[in-house]
Length: 282
Image 1 (cartoon, one colour):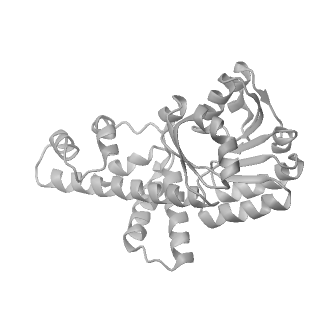
Image 2: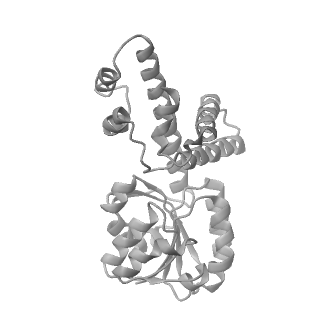
């Protein structure tokens, strides 16, 4: 299958590599062209523009940073995609934006699927991602083999935008869980308890999110090498707050969490892993 893959960051580069290893005809584009070199060494072709990556492709996959970037690049690639081709947007965006992109795609006779993922850098590399896919049943069925190459499981969530809906809920809970856990550790240290003891005890209790157990050693070592940049989880919090405002759903605790991550960004932690909020709060 001829696939155009646009966006080769931490996650996209690894997902694209798995498609290339599976034998697909891959044309890749990234604004920083050097990020395509490893994929080229595996047999992919590097495009000089989004339009070049998309021209003649049966499927275009985008894994980009923000809705604004996605929207900007659609102006280049949607007009040149073959009619009836599929665009899969794996970017983490707000649900109303996904629905807008679906309508925009339909105007070009392009089929659209929103399929953000749950999982980190290691999961992307090992093809262990969870895909959260929204779209028409026929389109989701057609794309199942690609999801299976890049991930271990796909949840088919029905209508367009539902994949993005669920991803937003996952990321806002991740952000708040990390902040709450960090504050608990900070208070425990203030009580005179040892940090290592706190990490071991709290991560063994059912009230703590399982991801904290996976991060325990990194937190104790002060290792905040990036898997999921803090600035992007802050972006996701802002998208969730925007969506809550659109739906008139009050989110008072999420607003407070946003301020914590914003302060961490202002302290120069934006390019560290999102778990660096632990460093900021403890």
